[in-house]
Image 1: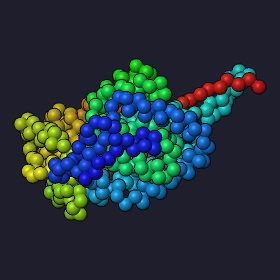
Image 2 (image 1 turned 120 degrees about the vertical axis):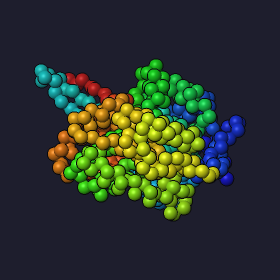
Image 3 (image 1 turned 60 degrees about the horizontal axis):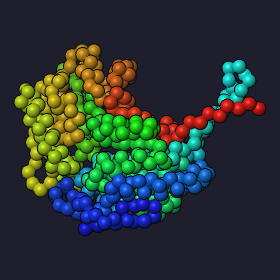
Length: 474
Ligand code: SIN
């Protein structure tokens, strides 16, 4: 059993309040607990971060880069991080190991970017003045992260924030705080100066957040999570006109044309739907399949789903872990039942799996209508609704008929057709003949209500920078 203090500065603090329990979703059992903080602790952490940031911003980019590179090395070689992710999130150990590598890569990529933050110098049109533009850090960044990637979503934000010269105060998801706090220790071990990274779980997210963003030193909020919560954080951040980066919910279309390699499309569909136990915001949420290949694709997908082994992540045979909570499991079941009530048919799966954990049967639904609840909600579970289409225009209209616009997928043997469809989809990222697009070297993010800003790529680090213009006459 873990009893984990939280991190402010270099202090592992216990506070006075009772610990929050952490559960293993594969069994429902309590596996440990964390000490937590409220508004006072969040405010104090911003102060500590602000002090540390003053020194950090004066360090050379090369020094910052080398410390981040050391973070990459220590995260990559940490023996226990993947086990901890599996324990508190539930995902199969192979996925957890993939997440550790993914997390480490954010540090490697941003170690490389830290020395490449550049400005510009130009002339005014009159030719009389020089226009100098530089990108200093912002100050303190408040980071709020989800449970689906307990390490990677922190790494994706912390690495560029530090690379650009900022300090951070993190509220990890209450479901997965142990991974976050272990990551904090690894960063300290790698030489990240005390106070730059502060991690405080809380039982009172709203008060914690309010206190953190009220501090004058806080200059940015970076959030990954649901669109509903993102809207609340945006409204609150607006009161202090804070910079924001929001990675919010998705409703990804997965398009299969009649000329697609169906075997490859099924393989890609399984990745797009099922990676990390189907709990990703980029997960394929609606499968639009040309009627000429609908049966073949649906049968192939159902066969692949039947091969999925839903079980505890630490069992090497498991390929899909539990849902994170009984509430999440129940919500998925309600969506499936509502879809069936409105005419969809269950090809495979279709219900929760009884037992101690929060497992859901890998499910394929056919005859799904374009406006069925299962296609309008973000499923966040192993359920694949298949919708047939005849005309490309009709399919594009259905695919874009949502306020979400994070990711999409297109399968076709005709690259021109695939690319023109990719361009027509109102999403921030598209996989063409690929079931995954996540890459620290690429700009991750959505359009419409799926978010603001980009994480990763060459764009990512500038999200954590100011732009200062100096008018020069010499
Ligand atoms: C997410 O689900 O929030 C992130 C998915 C990814 O990085 O691949």
